[in-house]
Length: 55
Image (cartoon, rainbow, N blue to C red; front, side):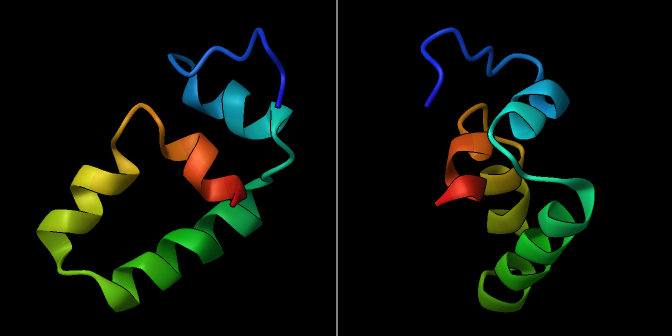
């Protein structure tokens, strides 16, 4: 993980972590299938989401 990763810029952070738009959409889709809608919003909207999306 890059030490200078800026989690404040979500798109750039996802790109630096190697998560392209198609992969990101697939990951969000899986999360939507598993969690209630309110929790999906909290998780995907969290500042740490780019880190979770790479796991």
